[in-house]
Image 1 (cartoon, rainbow, N blue to C red):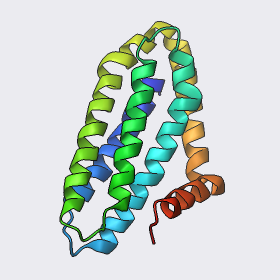
Image 2 (tube, rainbow, N blue to C red):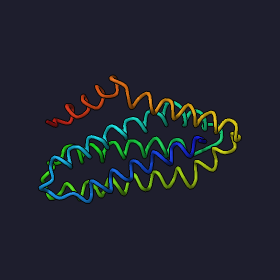
Image 3 (spheres, helix red, strand yellow):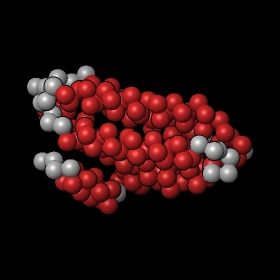
Amino acid sequence: MKADEVLIAHHDVLRGLLRQLAETTGDQTAERRRLRDDLLRELEVHTQIEDELFYPAVRDVSPLLSVAHAEHRQIDDQLATVMRTSLDDPEFLTEVRMLESTLRHHTFEEEQRMFPQAHALGEERMEELGRQLQERQDELGRSGAMRLIVRLKRMTLKLV
């Protein structure tokens, strides 16, 4: 798979988790906790593979990197709000929907603007970068260090 295909597939995972989370109710706290924690982990992995591999690779062909980094900060800030909101609070879904909107905007910008620019790298480089992204994503998904990062992030946000 090419780099953009790997990232779009992961965007789909993130969108799916947010959609599932938005469909829960206040009495489904265990399901909300599981989905919220899955979302936190997947966002951490996604941000890391983009920051480590994709963005450096496209810096010479896309002027959108500063926007993408700023959007990552917005997503992180909104995620922190979701993480701090009680799972049974009526405002929880409002915060999830705000995160969903922020993520939707970011993924649209990448998929419609940045990814086409990335194709200036050439098909061979996009395939190679796709392999690297997938390998790193898989590695981070199995990583004890990533589990620790997610756990520390939850603790930092005073979650139980």
